[in-house]
Length: 286
Image (tube, rainbow, N blue to C red; front, side, top):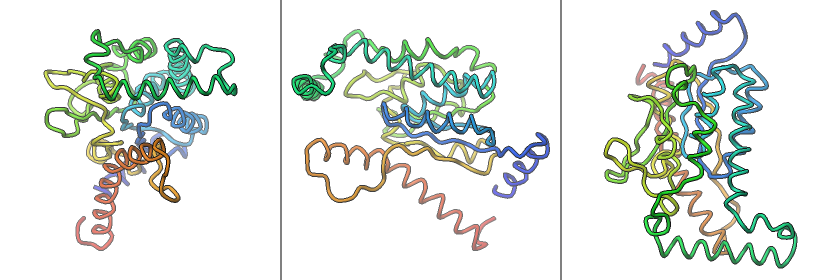
């Protein structure tokens, strides 16, 4: 497989007549921290030396992936603009549905900071006591409105130049589901990949219910090995693997638990890749 991919990469360089290198991207989820991945993608597009064949994304990584693919249909600059527009719309929507964020004296003001902390604690308590089926019976999700407002999925399904693989977690089986291998990407698939079960009801697709893909694949790598020609994968990592010293505050402990949980599947897959590469290097397999 490695030999085939090396030949494909060389053929791509010859066909394009340029020094661009064809790669795959793997984009982790991380909520609002997905904006950092946007910054990485923006610099890659601006640089122009990499040609992206496929993207595997999870949660916020899936949002970035579809925006990238949608914009790339009209070229690298259009892809940069589409990613900018998506995150601007996400930011504007967040302000609209965050009443405390509209208070002009909140930031840097002791009383405002106190109100913000109290609101955060109240929100966490409520979401631990009540499910989204109770708190959000009409399944309102402003993120979906932002997504469909920014991405033309009908055109994406017909004209996409970049392959997309989006991970979600099957609630019934507990297994990872990778959308894009056997089906064309829809808005519901992106929402399934980014569905945090404490906040939103499971997304139903073809009779199956899905939660955030980060629980089982953050991001998944194997579709990039089996369904693309590119030999290299660039992982845009959001969640730190290591932290100095043990966390001590309740918030820091919870954050570290989430980091470990959402990194575990990626670490296992990287270990498997390393094992196969080692066997190839030693001539055990070809």
